[in-house]
Length: 354
Ligand SMILES: *Cc1c(COP(=O)(O)O)cnc(C)c1O
Image (cartoon, rainbow, N blue to C red; front, side, top):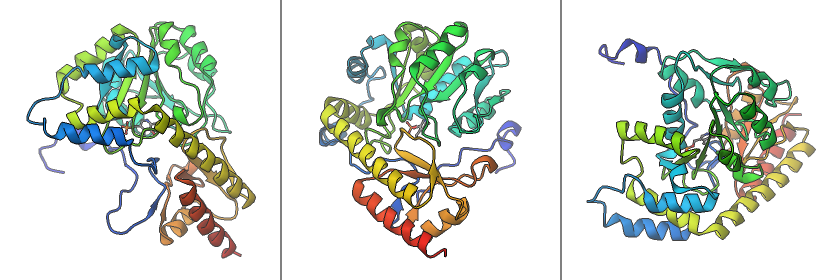
C-alpha cells in the first residue's frame, strides 16, 4: 500500500477469489467453473470478432441484448449486459444503496456483497441464516433497505422458491430486492418472470457458470425498463464499453446453442447426484444443493484438515475460515470422470484416517 492511498481504501478488505494456481496441475473444484469448454459456436464467433477489435464494441450490445431478451422472455429494454455479474451487482450497490437504503444480506452468502457494502461505506444489515442454512424470508420482510439474495445461495447451494421471493417483493413495493441467480440453471427456478409484475425486483445472472464463460466475463441484469435505465446511467458514467467484442460474440454464440447448454447442465446435475451419494456413504453431511457445488462436512475430519489433505493429493476445493462454516468445504461439481477421480481420492483420505 502506498502512502498516497486515500484512507477509506486503506481500510477496505478486498474480496478473496478462490485460488487460481499456476504452479502445477490440480483437479480444480474450488471456483465453481464449468468443466466443459464454451460452446463451439461461441468460440467461432469470438475468433471472427478478433479482426474487428480496432473498433469499439457496441456500447448498447443490441444484438446480445435482443437475444437475451428473447431467451428470458422479456423486452430488450428490460436487460443490460455487464462485465461479469459482479459488475451488475456493483451497479446495483451504486444505484440502490445509501444511508437510507442500507444493503441487507445473509451472514453466509456470496462474499462480494460485504466487499461492495464496505467499498461504498454503507451500513450493513446482516441477517443470519437459520441453523440448517436456509434463508428465512420473514426475517427480511420488515427490514428497510436494499435486499441482496443469492438464489441458490452460495456456498450452501440451497434455493428458495420464487413464491417466497414474491412474498418479500409484495410485502414492501418501495424496497428493491436483487436476486443473484448465478447458479439457477442447475436445478432451481428463476425469478425472471416476476420482473413483469414487480418493478422492485432486479435479477442478476452470469455466463460464468452454466455457460462455461468464466474467463470471458459476461453477466446481465433483468428488471423493469426504469431499473435497467438506472444501471445504464451508472454504466455510462463508469465504463460504456464494459463488454468487449469477443465476449459479446461468445454470448451470442452461447445463447444460440441452447442444446449444448442444457446438455452440460444435465451432466453436472448427474455428477452432483453421483458425488452426493458417494460422499453420504462415506459419512459426509451436506446441504441440499441445487447448484454446481456441494457444501459438505464430516465429523471424522475437520474442514481445514480435509482441504489440506485434498490439496496434497492435487485436488483444490474451497474452504472458508468463517467460524460458522469452517468445518465445511465447498466442492465444485466437475465432469463425471473428474468426480470419479475425486471420490477415489477422498475415499483414500478417509480410509487412511483410521
Ligand atoms: C460466481 C458468482 C457471481 C459472479 O460471477 P461473475 O463471474 O462475475 O459473473 C455472482 N454471484 C454469485 C453468487 C457467484 O457465485
